[in-house]
Image (cartoon, rainbow, N blue to C red; front, side, top):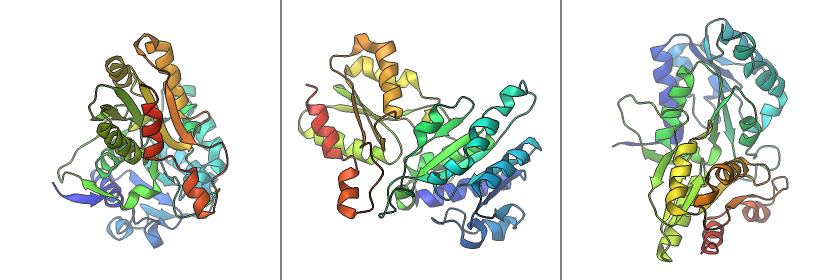
Length: 323
């Protein structure tokens, strides 16, 4: 199978969906003129025109507000946030409007909006351009939240998100854009709400998503050398969370560890830990472990940024203590 980058995979998804459905369009800052910071929109305006690939003013409130209006009028907009950190600017549009309109109108209308949000730590972007904020949206009923970790899922989940009649927040980690992986040439979809067991194991379950999957899989390799066989689950979607896959795995391995790049406090890992404690406590032979960033803003200093990150070695050492 051919290998393409995460960025190319999302570009292909946009191209295919815009070709399939002329109601799909994209708008955001510098996406037509620049092709997106990570090349994820390159060539689209030349193929589909500047009416369907729109550069906007620097106002996230207007971008998301216009996307909601367009969706209510029958279009299927994709709104690019440039950086996920800027979603704080348009939170009212997201959690008071986009997430609630279908419910408030009794299902008489749909809001098929995709908000693309590049997130995560990269190249000393510091406290305002490096955050992983996915847990904010896990708490908002009415939104779906996807977090791909590889080019295959990036393409398949974006296509599914664009076709969904509900609003979807699509987090795409900045580190992943340049990473390559196998992606079929034929059309495919990745279902929203279904996790994937990336590596089967018998001794401990490691649940992760997005860029932290790289560390989770490396941790599993470290543990393998120590005689511990880890099962690794890629959530792919954090709202809805695939409870069945997680509980089935924990019932087998009797141990659970959850890892993410986002701040540990109040993170996705806390929700998963609570869910397993409520529904699968009898399976467990050890306390649940969570790995996440410290409860501080992300530092600019390269050594401090490095120290801030969760590593595969930290995950492996923590899990070894469970036995």
